[in-house]
Length: 477
Image (cartoon, rainbow, N blue to C red; front, side):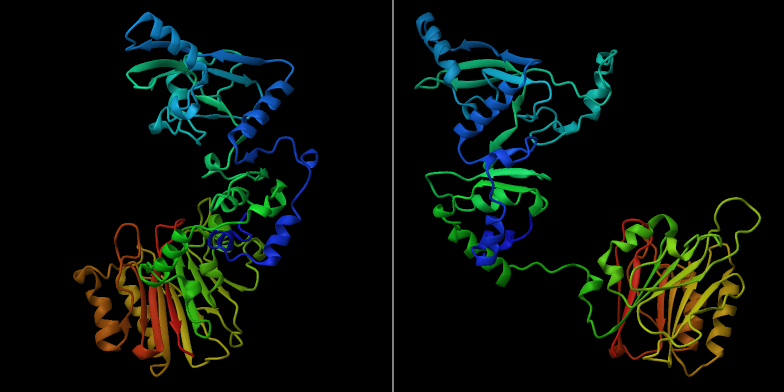
């Protein structure tokens, strides 16, 4: 639950925060039976797990460990140690139980790290390699998704001098219908029942317990133990202040949602099939923070309706390309999403020589052309140059931002030479993108402009669903 985790962690919770927590206080009888329980005290954990075990009428098992003693000086000492073994706490026996009580259907977890290379660790639930290596065990009635857990053997010292060792062989499991708050660290649950009853005050115990659940609706508190106070370790408070004031970490990139809200913000991305990734875009706050977003290689079919690709708060313009004669989707296509008013008649498609040009003008800055470009690597560079000349010659005095995938690697001088001569030498544009824009370590997505340096900022944004990175511009208004 992220309701007030930061405030609880630093002791800055408010009366309103506490009231919200009190509203989740209920009787144990009103809690969902399947929800895991969290206690501070081990005794309460053991008691609850025993109750759950006893509630099963069949398929209950008690598994006694195989144990022996080594290093005992005499048979009498060995016998004495064997009598003491059942009372050795789990924390002293490397989490292997003397008697393991389990029932089919009971919440259970791995107690120790069995195979870290396969994710069979305390708190994990994978095991693909283990299932593959034990595939001969999967006879009729054994589901292929079940993971075999085999006994493990460990040694731990006992006695006053610790000279003797107990060798214990047991399944590395433990019941987990309830666990201590301390052991729950790292857990994420949709439901949890929390009991914070204790005679002692533990700094951060409330924070750890209450932050295990994803939503406040899934939180049930049977004892908030408010009289023990929600305490804070002052050493942590001091360290948090140091992190903020003296050791703060700066991001190596600028998130788009941190750009100046008063600027006109434009983003471009070769989405490599936007029809597959529209949900990724909808959920990414970086794109929803931009005023204009241009995507290429959308691969939209002309039969696709706009409502499939709409984004709340944005108007969609499509510059689709024809499918051709073959089956499947076309390989190109441009989509423009705008949340600012555009000049009447814009955007419009101005495709030339097989190269996609999409022209955009805003009402607030009608003298600025924003031109989205996509050139397939199958189109000759000479056709790109010819098309750019025709676009630039239409109004040589216009302010322009020309942004897109040119499929010319700006990092290689011989590749970029003709484009550099046209845009930089002859027309005095600046190319503002300086880092790699693809996972192949090429710079083929460019941003050209004739705006003054102080009028525009540009950069690159990493993406996970395309092998291209997004490039962006923020214009002072």
